[in-house]
Length: 114
Length: 115
Image: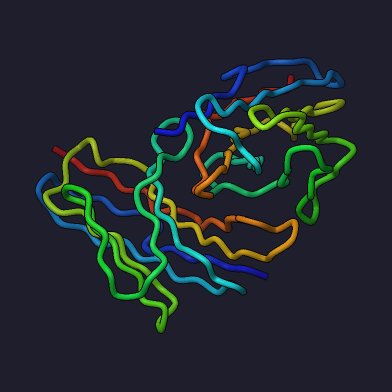
């Protein structure tokens, strides 16, 4: 089956630093990748959609300058949380969609900003 | 704005019980409805439903979509403690263009199965 990996699985950083999270489709080419955020006891909220080689589309209320998304290849997308603050602490999950376009989720990255 | 509502929000049962989880939606350009199981990490895929009235089955789990009622149910029979998880319903409301494959998730149903 389709496998999506994320790295790191967890990260703790100081307020004001930037954190990069990688999302890789291991055995298929992902034309589209999605980034979600999940706060404790809440559901997944879509942050942005990225297509390989083009700019990401951000959902309303998500700051594109704060959450930088790069989808440089068909197997890799990165999310960089710039100048992270404690309120950015969350569980970040990516998903990848290829052909057929079922979304497969990565294992998630737990970000804690001190 | 697309909306997905799940009920109940939480459910506590004993092993062997049968449970039914509900999902209703309001979405433009409906393409499919998906069920996921989430334990400690990211959701794992259970079912994708596109056609009304056709039951999908996998072991003790089954699901069906009712496009007329804009809803779906997920049934779990003979529940086990390993079924304890959050069950998420999501709808793919293909907005076209850059909204391809956008999923809107419900709040989830927290299922707890006691021995």
